[in-house]
Image 1 (tube, rainbow, N blue to C red):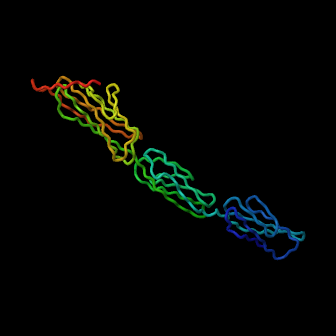
Image 2 (image 1 turned 30 degrees about the vertical axis):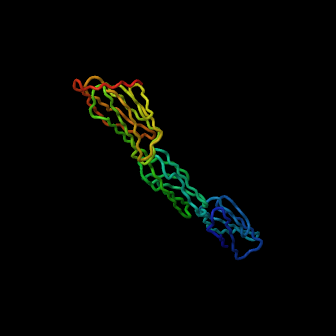
Image 3 (image 1 turned 120 degrees about the horizontal axis):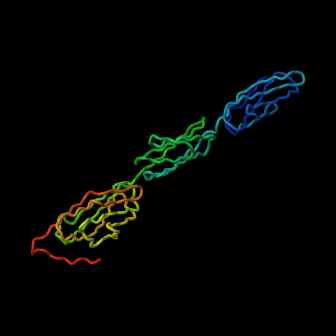
Length: 291
């Protein structure tokens, strides 16, 4: 007696079995399909629920003779993968979590592996990843199930704002009791917008604030400005005016900074102005500004 099947079979599809017996009448056939399921008859069918290799055993017997057995090996394959698509962000801020996902239009028991392009990997149909460095990365997902393998790729750019701040005085030297204008310039040299900027400048000792421009406000011994957003490559300038003291000396301003979301921020270097007393008879008295 011989037993055969029409495999290899695709998971979920029907496998057909048959037997060939040289002689015998009124034969009864029983089958063990190798997965815990049974059947009967000379040509049964069976649907396997898991991919793998199975040994099916058929037993034939009648009232005239003892049982005769035969075996046939069944290979059940996963359905081929088709239509793999990877999705995810094209641009993301440095430090933010990137969410990637993959899907297929066909295939069974699909396993997904990811290469994020920065020497790190992940697995599963949906993954998250945080990049530690700005740049452009190629993200590759591989789908495999033992029957076939497909890949898909996408590109993600990791960006961040980079702020720089500078400050200058309207003059390197000023007479006592005269006005002096400070200008602060903040520039975004990064490749992403900076948001919720806060520019802070400590008021130097020995001066009196005469005027604050560009919507700034004095809070204690600081002047502050807020800026909603600053695009890559853009700059913003703010100013305030002080009156020098009545004593000659040096005004040193070395405490000014800008901060923003996403940990963007910068500090500046010291700005020094010399205050001198004019020669007698040359002093010009300007009216004080009442705020």
